[in-house]
Image (tube, rainbow, N blue to C red; front, side, top):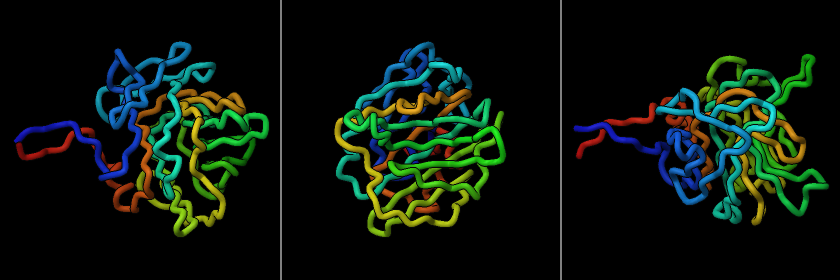
Length: 225
């Protein structure tokens, strides 16, 4: 019996960034969409595995090419571990190049207006989860969003616990030709200040039990060899 690195949560994983390779921070462990660390984005101690992405909130981010395998997907899951240093944070985003002026983008993030309003958003048209608590400053929080076009539902998970589903009848799937970035919103100019680990994109909506598996995932599992 030996311990080995495994990805967790079954099939459909199209991009996976664990930030464990200090020499290639943006490595995609699930495919070929490896990113480039920009403006001093660096490695820090990870929540899972040996490393996480460290961002200064000024201009650091990791830039990837388009994730074209999501173009025709009828469902999607985005998940990550986050440890923000401040309350306004963009976790990851996929800006649609032809529509930058119209503000169209796919992304996930946590926003705080400086007052009493906090918001988690997901998708092109901003599906808000204002009644749930945002990731806590200075602490690791696991967040995930799932979207299923068959049921037109979006679900937000915090630390493996699901919110009430929200109905959405539009399209949440990134357009072909979009870029994907971790730690920056290319339209609004927001940068993440803190640490990000275990960014995953799936071409299906994970079940509640699978999201819980990601929350409990330690980076190693015992397998029989």
